[in-house]
Length: 114
Image (cartoon, rainbow, N blue to C red; front, side):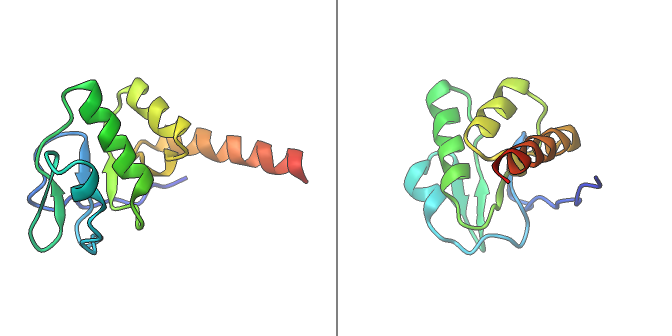
C-alpha cells in the first residue's frame, strides 16, 4: 500500500501533529476544542504540540471531531498511534504500517459480518 505524501501547512510548529496544507475550511472545530494548540490564518495550523495528557486528549478529540481529516499524526509513538486507532482514527496516522494493520483489521471484521 503506497501512502499519499502529505504536505504540511507552513505555519505548523515542528512536531508530530500537523494540519495538511490546503485541506482546512476553517470549520472551527480545533479552535473550539483546543484553542491553545491551534491558530488560524488562511487555514488552521498547529501552533503548539501537546505536552501534557490533557493537551494530548484534546488533540485526539480534535482528530475525532474534524470533518475533513486535515489534522494528522506523522509521528511514530506507539502509544499515541494506539490511542488514535482505539478512537477509530487510524487513517489519520501517516505511518504505512498503521495503515496496513488497519486494513487487515477492517478486512477481518468485514468477513465476519458477511
